[in-house]
Length: 66
Image 1 (cartoon, rainbow, N blue to C red):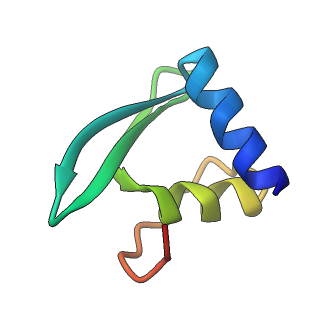
Image 2: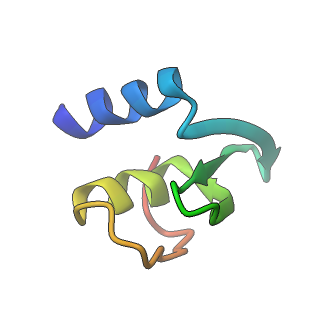
């Protein structure tokens, strides 16, 4: 539940923005304060990133559920 709230907060503040769809799944971009951008991340990957404490390293894994 907390992960979803953080996700929605980041959507609202523009840290995470929706992008296109890929294979029927929405993708998102994550913007870091230092200017780094993560592109084409699935919601499950973003949730995992939030659950990991939002580290600088991002892990792509299509198997994470949205």
